[in-house]
Image (cartoon, rainbow, N blue to C red; front, side, top):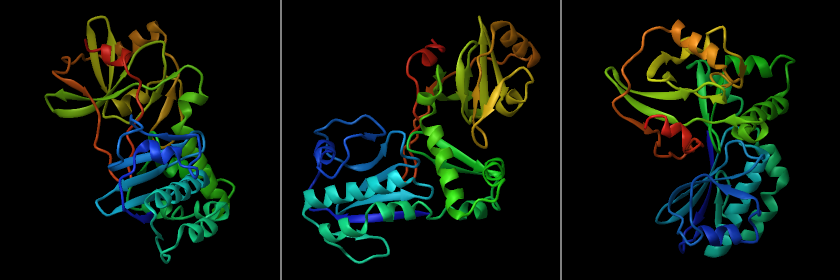
Length: 308
C-alpha cells in the first residue's frame, strides 16, 4: 500500500538546503513547523497546496532517506516525490534506489521518473480500496493535512456511471484533495481543534460545536455543546441525526455543518436533555505521526479558550 524511493545517506540535510535545491518546486509545504537550519530527522510530510492528496512522507534513518508515497497519492505527489529524491541524491552525491527497480544515478532517475511516470503511478493500489471495505465499513486514509474516510457511501457516489480504472482513481484522489484544502475553498469555514477529554467512562475524543459558526465536522467520539454555564456531551452519531442540522457530506463520516442559530442551538441542547459534568481535563489531540499519517490541521486560540 506504499511505495518507497531510497537514497543513501552520506550527510545530514537541513530543511533549508532541501527546499532551496533547484530540483524542488518553490511552492512546497511541510506539515508542521520547522526552521530552515533544522536538520531533517525522523518523519516529515511534504505537499503541494491544492495539488496533493496524500502528500509525500520523508523518513530519515542513520543510513538512508526514505521517500514514501501511499495509495491515492496524486500525480502532483508523485512528481514531488521524484523531485525530493533528486534533490536529496544531489546533495548527498549518492545513488537512488526506487522500489522494484535497480539502483540509478541521478541522471538515469530523472529520465525515467518523469511526469508520465507520475501520471501513471497515481493508479497504484486504488483498486485495493474495494477489497479493504470487505474487512471494514470505512478506511481511514491520512492526507497531507487531514484524514479522508473511504467507505460504501464514497464508493457508490464515485461509481454511479461505472468509471474505468483511471476515472475512478482520479475521482478518489480529487475527493481526498478537496478535503485537504476545504477551509481555503469554503468561505468562512472553521476547523475546530479535536481534543481528548477525561470522562468517568475513560478518555474520549471530542469536538466543540458553538452556535453561529460554519464548521468542519470531523470524526470524534463525542460532541460538546455549551450555552452559558451548561455543558452537554452528546454521542456524535446521535448529534448528526438531529433534524435541525444542515449538513453537507464530504466523505464517510465528515461533514460541513452550516451555522446553527442560537435559538435552534438551545433547542438542540434541550432535546439531548441530560447535562454531564464538565470534563476534568481536556488537551489537544497530538498523536505521534506514523509513516503513513499526517497530523490534523487545527485552528488555534478561540476553541481552546472555551475551557478556560
